[in-house]
Length: 178
Image 1: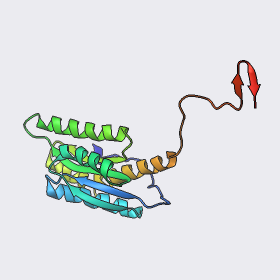
Image 2 (image 1 turned 60 degrees about the vertical axis):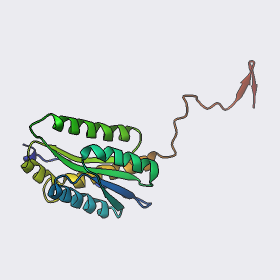
Image 3 (image 1 turned 180 degrees about the vertical axis):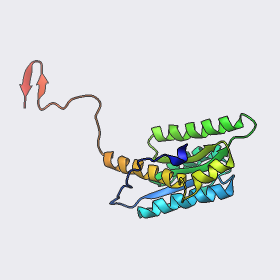
Image 4 (image 1 turned 90 degrees about the horizontal axis):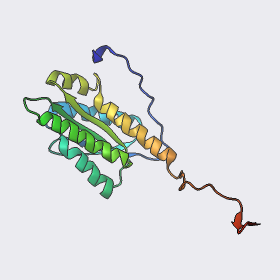
């Protein structure tokens, strides 16, 4: 049972320059979304970062909104929030898989995203996972985005090159020139 497990949680990063995040939420289940947002905001603010919030109709629209913001706005990272509760049809599988895949593809392209879209069997599971004083998955998604931003900043400016090793000398037809 996940509720009785203990997990290691990384300490939140410390930033020298300001950090701005975009929270993108699908508020289909408003009470659950509000708890996820509260947890995310608390974590963001504990790092002295700032945030904006936008709402989209459903979990499938979250990756699209993040992709638009990544292209057209100036955010350091993103927090994807929402809840998908299993129903009687296969729509659940489509929404879970495609929203997750969309976020992963954006992440692989360099966007710093914390995925807090809950995928659960029932409302009770969602309530426990969303509660800021429970599993706080909104806060966890914010922490994930903040950690990715810290890594991105750490590695920015570092380039591996194109596979060529630097040469101290220029060689021409077997002769060395300094």
